[in-house]
Each structure stands twice: as structure tokens, then as C-alpha cells.
Length: 308
Image 1 (cartoon, one colour):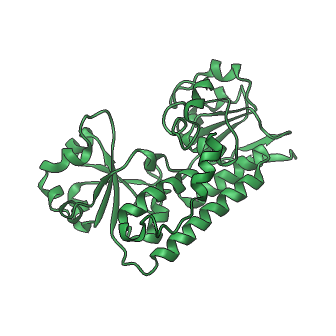
Image 2 (cartoon, rainbow, N blue to C red):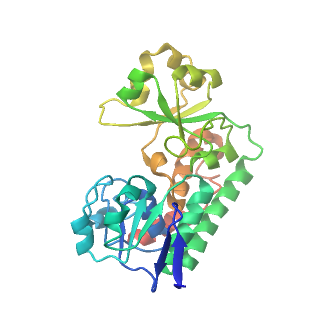
Image 3 (spheres, helix red, strand yellow):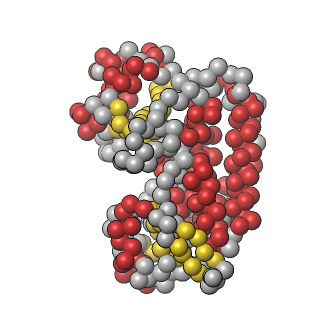
């Protein structure tokens, strides 16, 4: 039996004789895990999470360009001579036979807090970084405990996380984060989060699709909204002409907040921390002033040190 092994989301076993050091990352969740472990890939997706200042910033320009998420560049990946490739169950499961000719392929999948933690531990096993993984998980748990202590006696607000573009506007079907999503699985601890996915086997993990009429039946107190595509106007502005939207409690009280696309990428422990620090003060502003923030600045200091 190999000393470094893990089972990926498809049940496939990855065996390594030595800890992986040269990694290619084809997934935002993999980027999240690597920075938590104090590692940097030799190549990966430069857009999205990786280039954010909280992650690798401008350093991504020195990475091997591995193409796109859907169509990774096999030749560029092979030239990097990686020890391990990190991909996502879709679409990279369909390309396993190609990618596995270059290096062992670990496929990630699933959503929710537990899945994020288990994924981090798997990659830590394969890279020999268990101490870093345990420290990252402990920091996240400490943050969640601090939030719980601060908010346990606060009346819970009904929160909706939704996204969309003009296409969703036209068909009146909006992607909604559910309680099985990574952020949704945690927001249900701190808010009233009544959004569930009827069939967990269908569609994208942690998301369901609802019309404005179905959203209006629940009538959330707070709406967190993400605009997709390249529209010049955010989705919250495009919806202003819809009477159903105007009648929502959150709209009438001015508690609709446009947030970046991080929540859709938030399948890792680092992104969970970053997004909760952004989202919870919007939901409960009275609990999160500069003088009463229940979470210390240890995360910010860690991010600054790793970016330097």
C-alpha cells in the first residue's frame, strides 16, 4: 500500500509514493485547498479565484497556462511534469483517460461544509501537509463558534442567496443557494434559510432554480444577489421593473446586496471564511461594527503573510 493515498469524489483511489510537490490545478476548490496548505501550483486556471489578492494575486502570471476549465490544455499540462492534477468531477471526469496519462488525477465534487473539510484533508494526505490542514480547519471552526456566540440570541432573518443574468430574467428561473450548498449549509446555522433542493441527484450540487413567484411566497428579509455575464447593469437593477420583485420585503427595506461571484466558488475552507466575513455583517450590521467584530484579525494577518 502506498504511503500517500486518497479516494476522490468518484471513489477512484490515488496512490503516490512520495508527497506531491508539482501540482496542476483545474478547479477553484483546488486553489482554495492549496493556499490553505501553504502550497502553490506550478500551473492552473489564472482567472477567477486564483488571481484575487486574498489568494495568489499577480503570481498567477508565472504559472503554466493550462487553458480553460472545460478544455484544459493537455500539452501544456504535460510539459509541466506534474506529480498530481486536481480537477472537478464535471467536466474532468469525462477527460480522466487523457489527463491520467500525464499524472494521477484527483477529482473533487459535492458541496457543503463537511465536503470542503474532507476535500482539504484528502489533498493534505497527498501532499504531506496534514498539520496545515488541521490548523486551517481549527481556524474555521473557531470562526464559526465566534459567530454562533455572537448571534445565538439575535432574531434570525430569512436570507436568500440568488444569482442570474438576462437569460434568467427572461425565463423567470433563478439559481438559488440551498441548505446543501457550501455557504448555505453554514448560513442555516445563523439565519432562517428555508431553501432546499428537492432532488439532490439532479443538476449542480447545492443549487436549485425558482421563479420570483415562489421566492415571493417566502418573502426574505435579506437578498444576496450575484450578477452573471457581462451585462452593464447588475441583476438587482434589471429586476426593478418586475412588480413581484418590488413587493419583496428585502427590496422595500433596502436589504438587497450585490456580492461578487465568490459565493458560487465557495467550495473551500478559505472561501467560506472570506465570504462569511463579507456576508454576515450585511445580514446583521448591528452585530458587526469595528469594535464588536466577534472574529479576530488573525485571518487577515494570515492572508497578508501568505501574499507577501
